[in-house]
Image 1 (cartoon, rainbow, N blue to C red):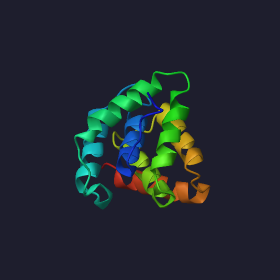
Image 2: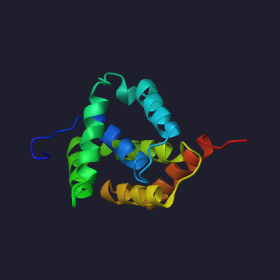
Image 3: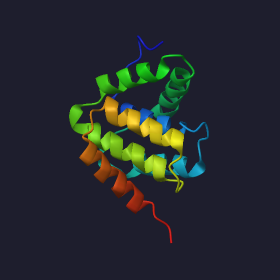
Image 4: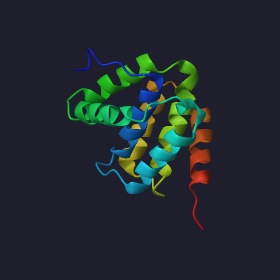
Length: 139
């Protein structure tokens, strides 16, 4: 399945957001709303066909059900995503993780994997994470 599958850069961003959302085995409404808002409002998704979301989500779910699926998913993402969008990808993943107000341990672990796989500098990652926390604060 993964051999013939290719992702667009936008698909890769969506795949990472979906991966973070289902990391704790529960896709929360706040996370889905966040993903939808990101896709509907950010310039990187200006020409994205939202009909692809279902295919990309199914691909993520299928891969995560396989033994080495996470590695395969990261391989697809790395091959589709230009390096200049790595920090963008991490920022979007952090926003999805923070959307429900709590970054659970499984989400934290998947964010760590994304940092590693996309070669995000630790200092830059900390700044991105702080920005996500600040955007999702409640009173």
